[in-house]
Length: 406
Image (tube, helix red, strand yellow):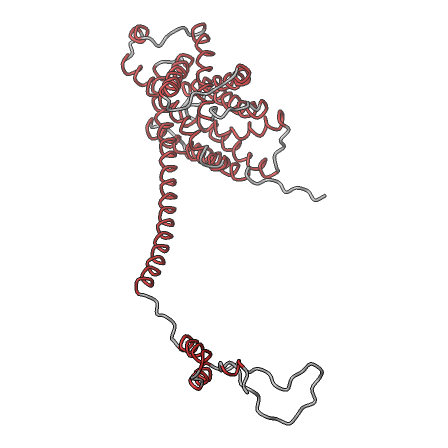
């Protein structure tokens, strides 16, 4: 009699064979799995009893083809695939557009930086040529900057900084050297050509390295020191052949280099603790306000209040022209420094330094063309060597010396 498994057609008995010598617990017959067709045949051969009915049902299920995927379901799958691909493409396109927008915005900021600087130097030089009172002019520039800063704080364009008395005391030395640096620059611009002043100011890296080594103990690498040689040599060559050279203009520009680089060293030495609202632009605005209050008494005690309509008219000057150019120079002065800080917040210091080097080239070239400054070939060569040295210095500064192996 067949077993129940055999009745369902799942196994079949082994054919009769000669007895084998098997180990203990072994059997001479083992189940053999059948293919579906054999299973169907077994189901067809059993036609009686409940077991047969169950077997026929199982056979039908096994022999049926897999259910087809509905068109709606397939369409939804394809739609999801297309949607995912479209979303990835949109994200990539948005990323590319965002990168392009940032590049265009940065390019616009660099353009404004250069443009404001060009106009500042042109208007400033035009005023100083007919109105030789650099302390008055510098005071007016700080006064306009103070008004602009207060306007931005009151209107909420910039967040009003929260600053303590201790922070103001720490910022005071920075304001002092900032005031002196801008005053010396205006004194130089009043004595020599704009191009020559900016050629001398190309020596800023030399004083930066010197003062950092003396006060901060930051010794430069050999390559940085070598990059200073073309800067010093180029400035010396340009000075020897400068048509507008005079010692007052030369030493004023040199003093401007020393004071501005002293400001950078002091900022590292004092390490002014900034609150969240005291970013670089707010710090510059605070220094501008302090510079105005520092320089106004000096102007009153030394030159006197000269930039008034009465004094200008008595000197035979065009009052409207001088006052308009002074105001425009002051606005450009404050604007180009604010844009400079905005750029610094977006790029590395090395990139900003390279941009500053290019800006100096642009200012020199435009001032020579605008004022028709006579320039000899040797003078041009000296200026080019100095500016190339500045560019080389900015590139070498980012190379940090490798740490010595222990």
